[in-house]
Length: 182
Image (cartoon, rainbow, N blue to C red; front, side, top):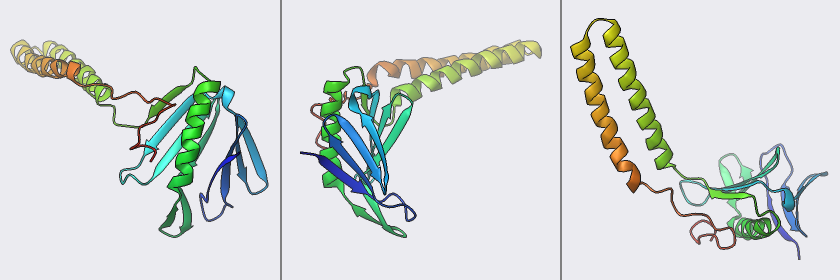
């Protein structure tokens, strides 16, 4: 049994249909057909929109990428929700992809708070060093040391919060969370 999902991506293109058949994802748009063997899957990335209804799936096969969306274009500002068939296809792709390509990375698009905080720590440290260096070169040692010390204090506060910020739950391709794929 083939699993199918279709969506119209734009008003100028025919409907795109994605079909999973025997370990191969087939994308058909009009007369054009592309085939992606799931054994060469390297990345499975699921994104959920802010409203919770829009979902998209980014699949990477080496250098080739494919995006599958859950809503179909109907007209200016109107979209048809095809979440049911999208969910079935996304679950099947995750399960079959995990079996055929065990080295593939599976994940969910979300705000990476830990990475953002680490970036803030790095920028604050760079700012403290630059402030101290520029104040020393200008001959204002006391002011530079005072400002750099305050920035280092903020740096320590940011670093203290780092252990409590988790990376979030891992995405299990064989059992995705119900809130992501209803």
